[in-house]
Length: 140
Image (cartoon, rainbow, N blue to C red):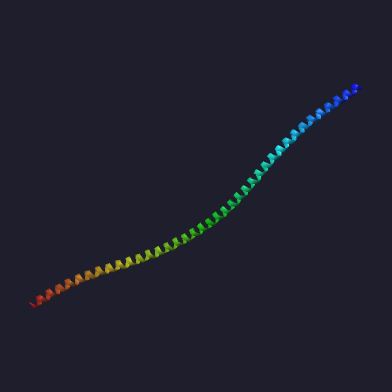
């Protein structure tokens, strides 16, 4: 009976020892799980921060895209206005070139007429001179 009690006590001690070892292992697991949970929380917090940063960057990007689209539309409008101005200027240049050509034509006609008048005057002077000489000869 004494041996039975001793055996029961040893068994109890062994069970307590195993229970204590199991408890240590469970505490270590709990500690590791808590550390893992804390690490997970940090990762989750970082993920949320990154998500917010990405969201802000996307908003800024969309705003920038809208701004660029507006600028592009403005540039296109100015290009069209510029092209219209160029067309108007070219039209005016054609009008001016035509007017210059008309004036040059008038000038050449006037020069031709002036040459004709000079030739006529020269011819008339010669004729007058001849007539004077003839008249002088007749008087003499």
